[in-house]
Image (tube, rainbow, N blue to C red; front, side):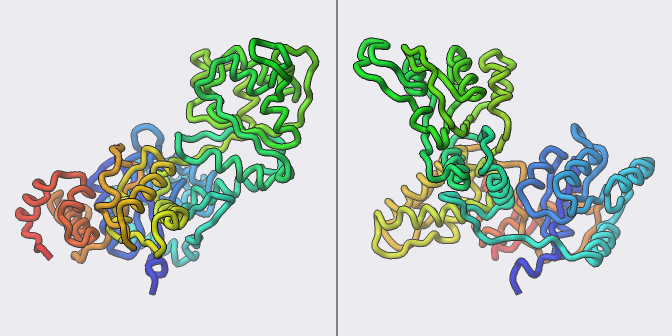
Length: 458
C-alpha cells in the first residue's frame, strides 16, 4: 500500500499556542493523518494555498487575522475544504454563528485529542478525502507538481487567449519569462512574434529608442530609421520585464501605447499604430511605488488588469525534486554519457534549502553538481555549501511518525521534545548533524538532549 493510500486525510492545525499545536500535530500524525501546522491565520493561508488540505482545524482568537476570517478565506478559495473551530467555552455563540457561515463543526477548549479524532472520523466517514493530483504537469518549459503551480497553470489557460494586459509578479529567479512564453503559446497570437525586453538599468534616451524606435537623424549616430520593440511585436506579444524600472518621464508614453496602441518614434511626428498584447513583469510592489510617487497611478491600473502572482520556490517545495530532475536531464548530456541520478541524501539537502535565488538558483546548483560529481550519482558533497538563505517558517515539513503511546494534551514539554528528537533522527536515518539542522538547534545541544532523554543511538 502506498503512502498516499495510507493517509487518512490532510489536516491543517492553526493555533498560536505552540504546545497545543505541536501536540495535535504529533497525535493526529500517529493516527494516520498528514498534518500541517501554522502559528497564525496569515501563515495558515500560505500553507493552505500551497498544499492539498482536506480539513482546517483552527483556533478562533489569534493575533492578527481571526479564525472566523480564515474560515471565510478557506470557503471562498476552496469550498470543499472543511473547517473545525477550536473555541473557548464562553464563545460558543460565535462558533454556532460560524457554522451558519460554512464551518463543519466546533470543539470547546480544553479538549482531548480523542474528542477531536471523533469529529474528524465522522467528517471523513461522510465523504471521501479530497483526491490529490500528484502527477507532474508541464506547460511549455514550465514543470510542476505543487498545487499552487497547477492552479497558476489553470489561470494561464483561462486568460491566455484574451488580449488583456497581464502583470506577472514574483521574486527574481521565479521564471517570469517562461510564464510569458506559456501565455503567448496558448494565445491566438502564438504564430506571431513574442518580443522580450528588459527595462532594467537603461538610460531614458536609450530605453525610449529601444521601445519606440527612432527616425533617421533623431540624434547623433541615428544614421537610419530603426523600428522599436513595439513595432517588432506588432500582431504578437510584448514582454516588458522589470517594468518598475521605467523612468517616470517615459511612463506617459507607455500609457498611451497601452490605451491607444499608438506612439511616435524618437524624432518623429507621425503616429505609429500597432496591435500588441502586453505582458509586464515586476519583482517590486508597484502599488508601493505608486504611493512613493515613483510610478504613475493611472499606468499601474492599466497594467494591473490581470495580475498573476508567481510563488517563490520556498513556498512550493513539492516542485524541488521535479525541477532538480528536469535540470538534471537538461544538462547531464553536457558532462556525462551515462545516466546521472541524485542520491536521496543530496535530494534531502535540496529540500531543506530555502532557495533565495528561486528556480534560477536551483538550476545553477544542479549544473555545478554535475560538474563536480564525475560519476553517475550526485551526492551531498557535490551540492554543498548552498547559499545562505532564511529558513521557511511558513510550512515546516511534516515529521514522520514515532512509535509512542497516546498522550493527552497535558503531556509535558519534555515529552514533546523527546518525541520530536526521535522523529527527526528517524527521518534523517540517525544522522545527528542533519537532525540538528532540521530541528534548528546546534549539534552539541542535540547530543546533550539525546543523553538527557536516553535516546538509543539506533
